[in-house]
Length: 317
Image (cartoon, rainbow, N blue to C red; front, side, top):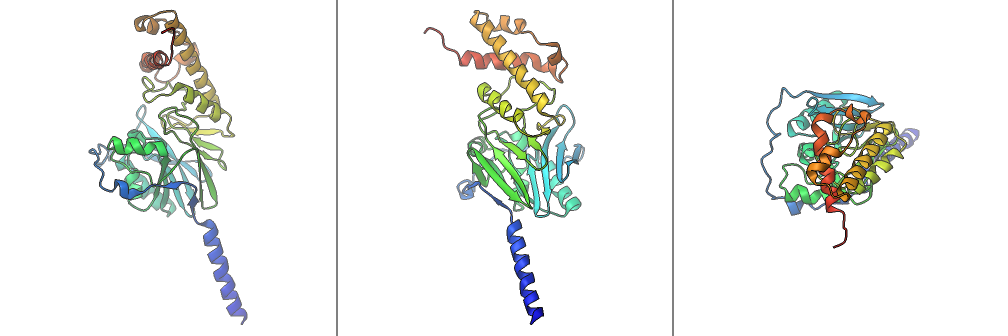
């Protein structure tokens, strides 16, 4: 009889533990049937890429960072490894996604359970479909669905979306997702790993590097609001989706840079200066001139901020 009770107790404990460890999230389902036959453009990252440099290196504890390519064209994202499976952020390309899936399986013997698309830009979320086809749940902000579908991007349409906040529980770990404000796109997601004091802040944050080109998909006010939020977080590791790992001090410096650039451009435009005058008269502090990409990104940065300022001011009319 004792053996029977012990057997039943063991089954109960095993079932309870498995249930307690089961991955869960607070995202809202997206009907994949709506997009089952959608048209997509050719995938320029689908071919074999044996010469692409790729890494999967430990950041802290069970948190890793994957990279694809070399500077200045390096892409990156954090990877959480748990006994129940892995969480991958932004595969960056289809050929790298295939490599990353195999590498995680080989090194940790777990499947990828979640893939987080930080925003609806192809250069970061390419390859998400590789994991989705193998059963992973793809997560993004709700605003990412439209550009993925509308632009016919050859990547995964999200399985789960959220508006302001979302939580993933997996293997005894918590991953928090936040949409603070439109910044670099209106679908930008911050991914927080509280246990590891780490944050994924793709494209919005920098690591002593100039923002890319003319800010592209750009919302100045929301970008500053997002940086304010990042600076207030209890994190000391920030992956910016490119280049090298960063920290909150770098984001304070970036915030100061963007506010300074904005205020200079606005002042010059209000003085009646034309674009040809504005770009010649913006001054950069010595510390910014030391940032990676200064020579190539300086004028495009002015151009992007000039476009924002001109489109968001109204005088007497």
